[in-house]
Amino acid sequence: MNSLTKLSLVAALGLTLATPVSAETVLRMSSWAPSTSDLVTKLLTPWTEAVSEATEGRVTIQTMPNALGAPAQHYELARKGIADVTWGNLTYEPDRFKSVWFAELPLSGGNGEAASAALWETYQTHLKDLPVFDGTHMLATGLLGGGSIHHSSKALDDPEDFANEKIRMGGPIQKRLLEEMGAIPVAGPATKAYELVDGGVIDGSLHPLESVLGFHVEDKLTNHTIVDEGFYDGFFFVVINERSWQRISEEDRAAIEEVSGEVFSRQWGAFFDRQNAEARGELEGMGHTFVSPSPALQSKIKEVRATMLSEWVTDGADFDLPNAQEVVDFYEASYEAKLKALQEGQ
Image (cartoon, rainbow, N blue to C red; front, side):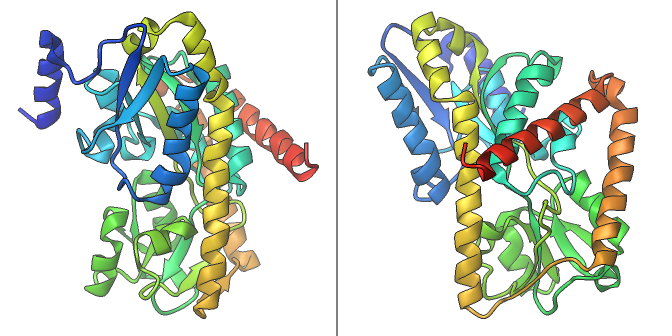
């Protein structure tokens, strides 16, 4: 019996770690990021404080001192009520959440704020009633503003540059991308990137730019290929257990949604936009090399995207999205509208 199953049994016996919700509620949040990380101190903590303020202290979110499971378990922790609130990345469960692949494909949007807001609107319009999301209430969706390619010894700006290069990645979309480029995908968590490149296991790694500093690989990965609309992305979520949500008063649920939803989704994407821009400035100051894809590489990325998107649309009924083309069209239109509004200062 694995640890998550054991915790689930505890919950079933009425001893769950999720807090019983009353007029004055403390919701327990499981978080797998270090408490000192920027994501916690600059994004998650301000949001939990906003929830408390919006509900005049009637609902507070308390981050537990230790995560209740691995990153890949965090959606399930909330669904089963082992924690009240969790956040994570649906990329960790790609087969279960194939319905969201459209947002993780290459060239899905290079502005994190606009992309995250568009993803929220798409979720609310097309995804929230899918069976895969039963048992939770979504509080925010987030994207990275596009991931990039980082290499230890050379810049990869043409398709042939990828041949036989060993690149760390995560999930089937990133794996397929690298295979189509002629690279050798190496599965491994981002947290192990330093160890893998230092040991010669990999030549490069896929990360958002901020993670080069966040995972302390700036001395190892000094060449960066920046794809303007993203080489890939990752669907992040913030959810609350549905039973915990329903026990909160209607007034306080409305107050929480005022500081969550598209508002918090935008904050999520804007956070990564800032972090990536700051990381680029710092890495440029260290003398790192930055390149953009050549026309040939850009064309190859577009070709791979078109193939993968066509396959995803064709398979839509298999993951409860028979209208998959409508979903991606909606997301793309929403992204363009929100990006234009940002650029016009609206």
